Length: 111
Image 1 (cartoon, rainbow, N blue to C red):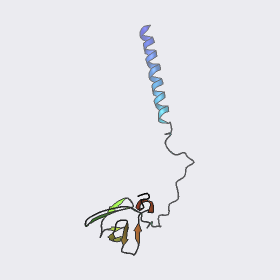
Image 2 (cartoon, one colour):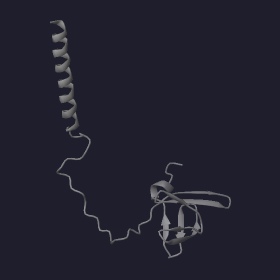
Image 3 (tube, rainbow, N blue to C red):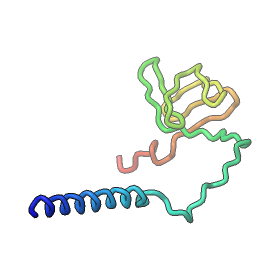
Image 4 (cartoon, rainbow, N blue to C red):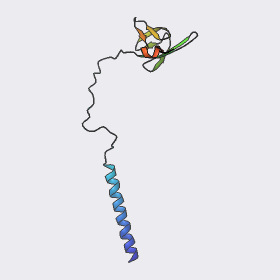
């Protein structure tokens, strides 16, 4: 009698565990966007030529510019355009553009 009860309990436990695992596999991840969210239409033919000067590090004759969160030096190319000069808060490009850091970064008020 006791082995039959243990067997019945063991079978019930295994069945409920298996059922729980099957249900857990079908649950939706709550961190994923809902079905209502659609992917944005992206025009693959358009080229983004916008360049943002994030920062400049200059010491003696060595200068580095962080443009679009990537590090460059004079003579390197960013999006196909050669960097010709790096100043304290500007970067001059071969196509005539001059990138300037955001004004709030270069102005120190109250000093």
